[in-house]
View (cartoon, rainbow, N blue to C red):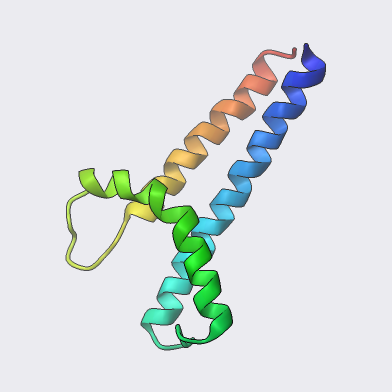
Length: 100
């Protein structure tokens, strides 16, 4: 059974890490667009922003229902990153505690 479970958990952890990077790039891209460092209407930037928006926003939307508006500061990506770290830590501890 450990032949399947351990690699599966490692693949899930890798997918969580990739999703973490997608959130970080989404945050940085938003800041760069806001401060006019990059042009949102450039084809590559627009495509990247659309791709990341479709990946990250479904996870951010439920969090935004519970987090109050802080006057233009969106802390929901940071809350999502903390949730991701929590679940990734749980999976790491699962690998350490239960050596299948």
